[in-house]
Every structure is written in C-alpha cells, then in structure tokens.
Amino acid sequence: MITEIFKLFVFPGLISAIFIGFLYWGLIRKFTARMQNRIGPPIWQPFFDWVKLMSKEDIKTKYSNFICLVSPIISFSSTLTVTIFIPILGNSLISFFGDVLLVIYLLVISTLMFALAGFASGSGFGYVGGIREITQMFSYELPFIISLLTIGFVNNFSIKPFFAISFPFALLSFIFYIIAELNLPPFHIPDSEQEIVSGSLTEYSGRKLAMFFLAKSVKLWVLLSIGAVYFLGAKNIIWFFINSFILLFIIILIRVIFARLRLDHMFRFFWFVLTPLALIDLLRAVTGFWWSV
Image 1 (tube, rainbow, N blue to C red):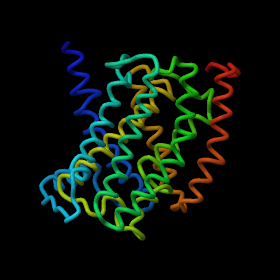
Image 2 (cartoon, rainbow, N blue to C red):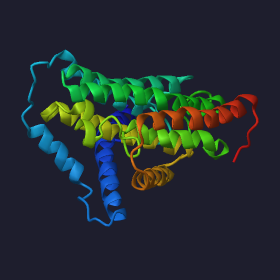
Image 3 (cartoon, rainbow, N blue to C red):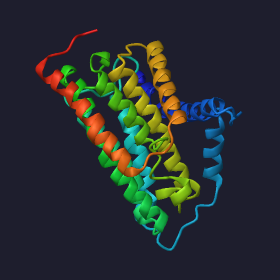
C-alpha cells in the first residue's frame, strides 16, 4: 500500500512529474541558448515562471465561460493520469491488455483542451490558434498512433519496456510526435508569436495560464518517459534517465537546427513521409518480419 502511494504521489507520480517536467523545460531553454551562443536563463527558471503566474491576477474577458475554467484542469489531469501506466520503476500502477490505447486517448484529450481553450476565449488570435492546434493534431496523430501500435503488436498492446531499434521508423515517428505535440520548433505553428501572439492561450493569464504551463511540463515528462521505456527499453531507473536525456538532446538539436514550417509543409511531412515509413514498420510487426536486438 505504501509503495503504491509513493508511486502515485512521489515517483513517478505527481511530484516528480511536475518537478522533473519543469527541469526538462529548463534544460531545453538552457541548452538551446548555449547552442545559439547565448547564456540563457537558469535551468530552474520554469519554476519561477510558474510561481509568478500563480500569483498573478486571473483576468477574465467578457467571453470567459465554463470551458475557459475547466480546460486547463482537464488538460493537466488527463496528462498526469498517463503516469500510472508507465513502468518507470519496473512495474506500473495499472497495467492491462490494450492500455496503450487508453494512453493515446488521454494524450489526445489533453491536446484538445488547448484547442477548446482558444475557441472559448472569444479572441481572434485564440480562434486561429485553436484551428491550427486541431489541424496540426490531425497531421501528427496518425504516424504517432501507428508507431505505438507497431510496438504494441510485439508487446501485447501494453506499455512495457521494449527496445525499438528493430523498428526505426516507428521510433522516428514518435520523436517527431513529441516535438509537434509540445509545439516546439519547427512545429510551433499553433502559437507562432510573429503571427498570432500566443495562439489559443493569448487571452489567458494568472492561474489558468499557469495550469496550462503545468500541463505542458507534465506532458514533456510523460512523453520522454514513454519513449525511454516503450521505445528504448529502460528496465531500471539509471537507463530510464539515460534514455530520457538522449531523447531530450535529440529534441533540442532538432529545435535549434530547423526553422518553423508552414502548416501545409508540416502536413505533407507527417502524412506523406512519416506515415508511409511508420506503416512499413507496422506491416513488419504484423507479419513478424523483424529482428530482436
């Protein structure tokens, strides 16, 4: 009982998801700055930003409604729920046949809340950001789902450790999914500051904006954890963090090298490049034409 409570609230649950999620964001900002020959903020800056947002006034527009209030809470809670299915310490709190499908559902719900928040804000910038969020989601979700199902065919459709080097295209699709899901360059189309200020979150401030920031930080922790276990086969805590930092470095490298794509370019990349490649690995998994490493 004590072990389950520890996993739920301490590690890999609530506290560690928030703390390490903020730390990962700090590392992204710091290493990105160093690669661009800048000093950059300290790695603990996301903690300060979140505390400051929580203390700010929560300004409401005349269009504010119930969706504006619950969308950040649902986004955060749905993302946090995924942590109970990831076997970071060897065993997950909950595991059953097909739990990978529930993970897909929870991650989609979290992203939809960002789009709904933009629609509910009554702002033109938020509306355009919400439309871009939905459009972008339709582009990257397909190769992402295919990549998870590929490993699922050889892993009993459960979130269990598996070294996916045998399915390189599935791994590649998942890495690009992380970048697009978090709206990081070159896929930061829904909140491109040069065009639509902050996209779907333009009209949000104070605690609601802090909750969205918290949801995105937890999502970074969750996605890197899935990659470290489900795709890179981490079976102990040491390899878990090694694999997580490998994925984090790849994300930072792509973020620094590439400029922002147009929405149609992104759609073509995910549907006409990554999707066919991911389908190759899915076909190999279904037919058993793959090798174990």
